[in-house]
Image (cartoon, rainbow, N blue to C red):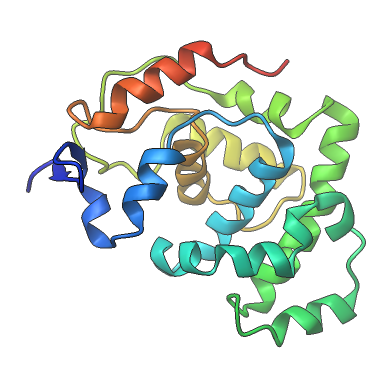
Length: 202
């Protein structure tokens, strides 16, 4: 199987873009670019947990619905959700109505608020698990890493839920903690440059 697929502009992209037309924009504009904003980091970790057992296409298609339902993933607000909010979300056809995952978002919002109090920001803590520089991926075949396993264990120890090592690895890929674009993907160098310019949160 080829490592790349030809994009709308005739340039090569990571092969997974071929799975859905909307993946090209997500791949080109978001995937792998480093993020330090706490709310975006929390959102992505929540969406990756919702994706467990489903396709990313399903979650991406519902992303705006998720944002509206969860108040743009403002974890300070979500941490105050009650059973009434759980029931509201379970009736929302625009999102994935899974009680365990919904309750995990509320729980994790509380844990996120605690982390900010202890560490200064989510970003400062999460970016500590950034791995050392690695050669370009030959293909996106890995589903975990030493670092994703370590971060998963650390989060679980603090009471976070639905943050297994596979979920965390997908999160690290998406948020730019690793550059998993294949070597001949048009975005590989762009993400490398963005990562070089990126100021790691302290």
